Length: 285
Length: 327
Image (cartoon, rainbow over all chains, first blue to last red; front, side, top):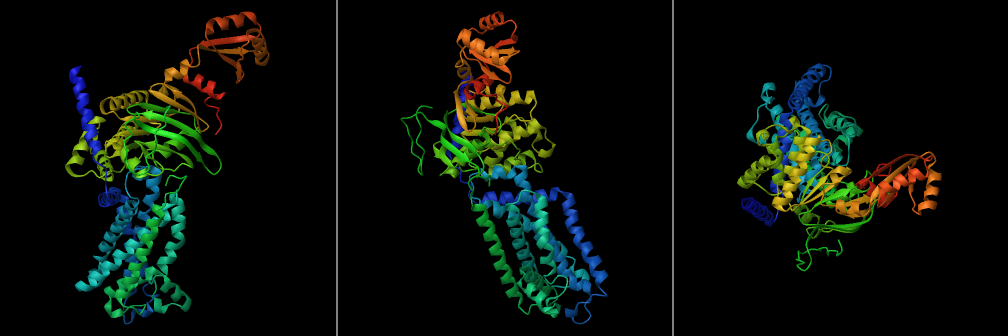
């Protein structure tokens, strides 16, 4: 009996010692943890990995070579094949799909209850945005880079500076679109609703980004919309770093395009931040 | 229960003169757009107590649970946990509570150990201390051998255990559990309750459990019975039942209304008519039932006498049955 009570006393002492330290998780550690979880989850779902790599490749080859002859890019100047013109557009499409659809996990986290345990932890809500958006952006960037590795196959060769510019445009497009996906997903409670909303502006966003046809070949109104589309700056920056001889379809320097993208990223991220930090009376989030 | 503990505003101050209460709920009110879920509920929970929140669906217990776990702000009133207000200091409350939700909150694509690691990170644990704590918690809940298996392969009982391990990673002093035995088989239920007792005994953890099950409420040290957002009973299970006084007599009659009048006339007690049956409390239920049956042999069709249950307490306090309560 006495040994038992000493055990109990010791256990209580340990428990209290554990409690005495003030719990101060900060921002970095929890964010990294959420980011890591996003990556692990993705690679544990093999079908997602296969689908995301294979479908844009297929799309690029089928559409690119199918349209190739009848749909010559007017801006391509010289004998550039459509398959080549379409390469940056296809790359941006992978990034676009991956970025936005990884944020469907926000809805799943809420439905599956995972989000609840994050919400009752003594952390800043910003951790949720940081961890999730960086996680999704990382995945999208990696996929963009994998696709970029095919570039030499169609005869594209990089100088180090152009490679950095290409990488930066992929990174910024991933980040801003993931944040956009987060904003849409945060208030929704079903993945069906997410699909509906995203499809409404995902396809127009991509089609009017200079991915399918160049800005300076489009009619006046369409060209105006394309200039207002932040994604256009990503596509043009990428295309200019892949084919410097082609020039920028917007008539802007690559640096300017990257700056516009950077500003767009910041705005998206700030909106996501503000949404998450609003603690509403009466609802769970 | 009798003295209300002042709620801390911003700085921790020890109130040495008063007995510490782990949880103090004060006049809490919560309104949704269309209805009032909590209507001025108050109670306190002592340290190292296993406290039950018993109520049917729609009684407001889930709302109260969400307020205590800082997921929602109440529309009025306040509650404190370890003397921190859930309204003005939610971050401090969160440092002190472990929460086990009714729905699962683990990530099924991660292993048991990975889930605990992630949880540890959310509470600032890392490195060797985190590793030690993970191993400790896994062995505590008997899942050491499944540490590296994905949680999606776990049974209901194992899921519940990993949820509890998750809630306890950061040594909370208060553990909140929402309907913890939902979906568990009887064996796993008994295990769970044993474990809650051990936690209380060995670590002095305060446990608050919501439940709609009478037999589960019986296991708590003390109970608050919730009905329509109000606390209608607050005591030990035995205390609540003994307050009824004597036995519960239930009579089936061919003409319940008529029998009710006759009993009132003859014995000057007033049975309540509920769902076609007459019920009343009597110090000597057996004798009374026999007397009534002899006095009105044609009216009484059946009679039963029993010691009061928590359901009887609920009926006594609210005037209606536990399960027929409207939202």
